[in-house]
Picture 1 (cartoon, rainbow, N blue to C red):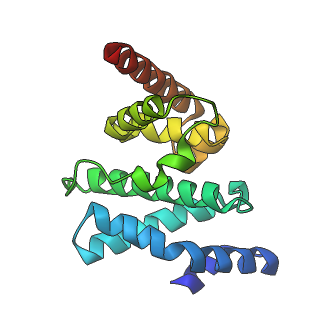
Picture 2: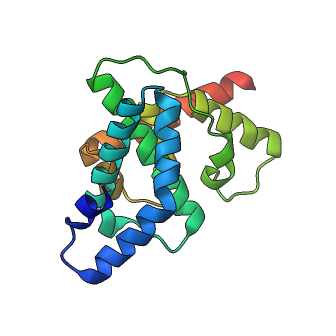
Length: 177
């Protein structure tokens, strides 16, 4: 399959960069896909959709920061998987993927009480992925247009989803106080 993906690039330098990227993150993509469905062929379809989405936006992916790249790949895979399952009218096997392993990477770099950060991360984890994923990508420093491109939606749609996610987060935090 790697040869198929490499055919999307004209430049040998980009092919080499993508080959390294693929070798490093293909396992993570497959792992996340198998967490969404136990059917091997469906997981492979999700992996394929994810890599097609990543290839179409490969020039936007910042691979210098490994944690940021890992979080991005995880998030895009999760979004593609949920989207693929919805399109194919399948139910998710689990309500929410375990995002605890990526919680430290998506938390804002501000001084906040640990309990408060845990509350924020729990609220985001329980939030509908349609709102949580754009918010997570925004907190990681991606622009609205980059998020729109990764998720295959319009920039206005991204802005609305981030606005709604922040409102949900604010309302739920106020309810805890």
